[in-house]
Image (tube, rainbow, N blue to C red; front, side, top):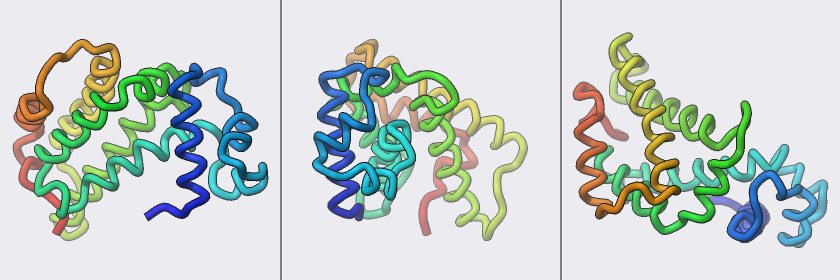
Length: 179
Protein backbone atom coordinates (compact mmCIF):
# COMPACT_ATOMS: atom_id res chain seq x y z
CA UNK A 1 0.00 0.00 0.00
CA UNK A 2 1.37 3.41 -0.93
CA UNK A 3 1.34 6.29 1.49
CA UNK A 4 -0.87 9.33 1.10
CA UNK A 5 1.89 11.65 -0.14
CA UNK A 6 3.05 9.23 -2.85
CA UNK A 7 -0.58 8.66 -3.83
CA UNK A 8 -1.12 12.42 -4.12
CA UNK A 9 1.96 12.82 -6.33
CA UNK A 10 0.90 9.91 -8.56
CA UNK A 11 -2.64 11.26 -8.89
CA UNK A 12 -1.30 14.69 -9.77
CA UNK A 13 0.99 13.24 -12.40
CA UNK A 14 -1.91 11.25 -13.87
CA UNK A 15 -4.13 14.34 -14.00
CA UNK A 16 -1.37 16.29 -15.72
CA UNK A 17 -0.48 13.61 -18.25
CA UNK A 18 -4.16 13.29 -19.16
CA UNK A 19 -3.98 16.84 -20.56
CA UNK A 20 -0.31 17.61 -21.16
CA UNK A 21 2.35 15.83 -23.22
CA UNK A 22 4.89 14.05 -21.04
CA UNK A 23 7.87 16.11 -22.20
CA UNK A 24 6.04 19.32 -21.16
CA UNK A 25 5.36 18.13 -17.60
CA UNK A 26 7.80 19.46 -15.02
CA UNK A 27 8.45 18.52 -11.43
CA UNK A 28 7.24 22.04 -10.53
CA UNK A 29 3.89 21.30 -12.19
CA UNK A 30 3.57 18.02 -10.29
CA UNK A 31 4.40 19.49 -6.88
CA UNK A 32 2.08 22.45 -7.42
CA UNK A 33 -0.80 20.18 -8.40
CA UNK A 34 -0.07 17.72 -5.57
CA UNK A 35 0.31 20.48 -3.00
CA UNK A 36 3.65 19.16 -1.75
CA UNK A 37 7.02 20.79 -1.32
CA UNK A 38 10.00 20.19 -3.57
CA UNK A 39 11.83 18.38 -0.75
CA UNK A 40 8.80 16.15 -0.14
CA UNK A 41 8.69 15.26 -3.83
CA UNK A 42 12.40 14.41 -3.91
CA UNK A 43 12.09 12.38 -0.72
CA UNK A 44 9.90 9.96 -2.68
CA UNK A 45 10.95 10.35 -6.34
CA UNK A 46 14.11 11.41 -8.13
CA UNK A 47 12.32 12.81 -11.21
CA UNK A 48 9.14 12.75 -13.28
CA UNK A 49 10.25 9.54 -15.00
CA UNK A 50 10.27 7.74 -11.69
CA UNK A 51 6.73 9.00 -10.97
CA UNK A 52 5.56 7.77 -14.37
CA UNK A 53 7.22 4.39 -13.86
CA UNK A 54 5.78 4.05 -10.36
CA UNK A 55 2.34 3.90 -12.02
CA UNK A 56 3.20 0.70 -13.91
CA UNK A 57 4.99 -0.79 -10.93
CA UNK A 58 1.98 -0.16 -8.69
CA UNK A 59 -0.45 -1.56 -11.26
CA UNK A 60 1.61 -4.70 -11.85
CA UNK A 61 2.20 -5.18 -8.12
CA UNK A 62 -1.52 -4.68 -7.45
CA UNK A 63 -2.63 -7.34 -9.93
CA UNK A 64 0.15 -9.89 -9.48
CA UNK A 65 -1.00 -11.09 -6.06
CA UNK A 66 -2.85 -14.44 -5.85
CA UNK A 67 -6.03 -12.77 -4.60
CA UNK A 68 -6.40 -10.93 -7.93
CA UNK A 69 -4.62 -13.18 -10.44
CA UNK A 70 -4.30 -16.93 -10.13
CA UNK A 71 -1.95 -17.15 -13.13
CA UNK A 72 -0.28 -15.16 -15.90
CA UNK A 73 -3.43 -15.31 -18.02
CA UNK A 74 -5.38 -13.44 -15.32
CA UNK A 75 -2.57 -10.91 -15.05
CA UNK A 76 -2.64 -10.32 -18.82
CA UNK A 77 -6.41 -9.79 -18.61
CA UNK A 78 -6.06 -7.19 -15.85
CA UNK A 79 -3.21 -5.33 -17.56
CA UNK A 80 -4.99 -5.29 -20.94
CA UNK A 81 -8.20 -4.03 -19.31
CA UNK A 82 -6.33 -1.36 -17.36
CA UNK A 83 -4.54 -0.18 -20.49
CA UNK A 84 -7.80 0.06 -22.46
CA UNK A 85 -9.35 2.14 -19.68
CA UNK A 86 -6.39 4.54 -19.43
CA UNK A 87 -5.52 5.12 -23.09
CA UNK A 88 -4.66 8.82 -22.77
CA UNK A 89 -2.26 8.31 -19.88
CA UNK A 90 -0.67 5.28 -21.52
CA UNK A 91 -0.24 6.98 -24.90
CA UNK A 92 1.42 10.05 -23.41
CA UNK A 93 3.62 7.99 -21.09
CA UNK A 94 4.79 5.91 -24.04
CA UNK A 95 5.84 9.13 -25.80
CA UNK A 96 8.74 9.40 -23.34
CA UNK A 97 12.03 8.50 -24.96
CA UNK A 98 15.56 7.66 -24.00
CA UNK A 99 17.07 5.48 -21.33
CA UNK A 100 14.38 6.42 -18.75
CA UNK A 101 11.51 5.82 -21.17
CA UNK A 102 8.31 4.18 -20.04
CA UNK A 103 8.82 1.38 -22.60
CA UNK A 104 12.21 0.54 -21.11
CA UNK A 105 10.72 0.48 -17.62
CA UNK A 106 7.82 -1.77 -18.68
CA UNK A 107 10.30 -4.23 -20.17
CA UNK A 108 12.71 -4.19 -17.23
CA UNK A 109 10.12 -4.38 -14.46
CA UNK A 110 8.13 -7.10 -16.26
CA UNK A 111 11.30 -9.14 -16.85
CA UNK A 112 12.46 -8.78 -13.24
CA UNK A 113 9.00 -9.74 -11.97
CA UNK A 114 8.93 -12.90 -14.12
CA UNK A 115 12.43 -13.76 -12.89
CA UNK A 116 11.38 -13.27 -9.26
CA UNK A 117 8.38 -15.59 -9.71
CA UNK A 118 10.58 -18.19 -11.40
CA UNK A 119 13.17 -18.04 -8.62
CA UNK A 120 10.46 -18.53 -6.00
CA UNK A 121 9.19 -21.59 -7.81
CA UNK A 122 12.66 -23.02 -8.41
CA UNK A 123 14.10 -22.52 -4.94
CA UNK A 124 16.30 -19.65 -6.06
CA UNK A 125 17.06 -20.93 -9.55
CA UNK A 126 16.45 -18.53 -12.42
CA UNK A 127 15.72 -18.99 -16.11
CA UNK A 128 17.34 -21.51 -18.36
CA UNK A 129 19.05 -19.85 -21.33
CA UNK A 130 16.14 -20.77 -23.60
CA UNK A 131 13.62 -19.33 -21.09
CA UNK A 132 15.70 -16.17 -20.74
CA UNK A 133 15.47 -15.69 -24.50
CA UNK A 134 11.73 -16.42 -24.50
CA UNK A 135 10.99 -14.08 -21.57
CA UNK A 136 13.14 -11.39 -23.16
CA UNK A 137 11.08 -11.58 -26.36
CA UNK A 138 7.79 -11.78 -24.43
CA UNK A 139 8.56 -8.75 -22.23
CA UNK A 140 9.73 -6.69 -25.20
CA UNK A 141 6.54 -7.73 -26.98
CA UNK A 142 4.45 -6.48 -24.06
CA UNK A 143 5.89 -3.00 -24.68
CA UNK A 144 4.74 -3.18 -28.30
CA UNK A 145 1.32 -4.44 -27.20
CA UNK A 146 0.96 -1.43 -24.88
CA UNK A 147 1.93 0.95 -27.70
CA UNK A 148 -0.64 -0.69 -29.97
CA UNK A 149 -3.33 -0.53 -27.28
CA UNK A 150 -2.56 3.17 -26.81
CA UNK A 151 -2.89 3.70 -30.56
CA UNK A 152 -6.16 1.73 -30.50
CA UNK A 153 -4.93 -0.91 -32.92
CA UNK A 154 -6.66 -3.72 -31.07
CA UNK A 155 -10.42 -3.82 -30.82
CA UNK A 156 -10.91 -6.93 -28.73
CA UNK A 157 -12.30 -8.04 -25.45
CA UNK A 158 -9.64 -8.24 -22.71
CA UNK A 159 -10.45 -11.96 -22.24
CA UNK A 160 -9.61 -12.70 -25.88
CA UNK A 161 -6.40 -10.66 -25.59
CA UNK A 162 -5.43 -12.41 -22.34
CA UNK A 163 -5.95 -15.83 -23.93
CA UNK A 164 -3.80 -14.86 -26.92
CA UNK A 165 -1.01 -13.42 -24.76
CA UNK A 166 -1.06 -16.40 -22.43
CA UNK A 167 -0.70 -18.79 -25.39
CA UNK A 168 2.49 -16.98 -26.43
CA UNK A 169 4.17 -17.34 -23.04
CA UNK A 170 7.01 -19.83 -22.68
CA UNK A 171 5.37 -23.17 -21.83
CA UNK A 172 7.80 -23.86 -19.01
CA UNK A 173 6.77 -20.64 -17.25
CA UNK A 174 3.00 -20.54 -17.91
CA UNK A 175 2.08 -22.34 -14.74
CA UNK A 176 4.49 -20.67 -12.34
CA UNK A 177 2.99 -18.24 -9.95
CA UNK A 178 3.53 -16.91 -6.44
CA UNK A 179 3.72 -19.63 -3.81
